Image (cartoon, rainbow, N blue to C red; front, side, top):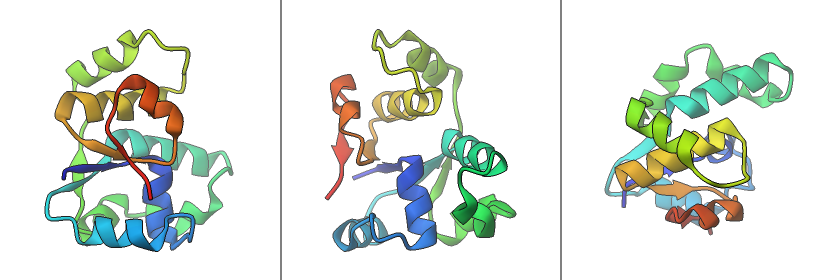
Amino acid sequence: MRLLLDTHAWIWWNTGNPRLGRALVDRIADNGDAVFVSAASVWETVTKHRLGKLPDAEPFIADIEAVIDKDGFERLAITTRQAAAAASFDHPHKDPFDRLLIAQALTDGLTLVSNETLFDSFGVKRLWD
């Protein structure tokens, strides 16, 4: 299963937050296929850290690409096709980061690792234990 980590799942992975349950941590770590971190999550994390909303992100934002690589995750760029898909959703949810992640999951056939049940209404495959 090819997994795309939602921003909170990726942050909780890096900070050891127990809200990312043990079973899910094991599933991500032992996943036979690729695990992706989106450029949208990097953008969201660094932006929210700069605004003081994510102080826990401090240890890993200084060399964020090295952290992604160290975890064995794949970097997922944002394509114009994905951006267009995110902008075209006829859905009241307006968070641009979430919309991009959902679009990436849908266009690339990825399972989104997220506790956001609202994402289900977009038709995305979602994993959360």
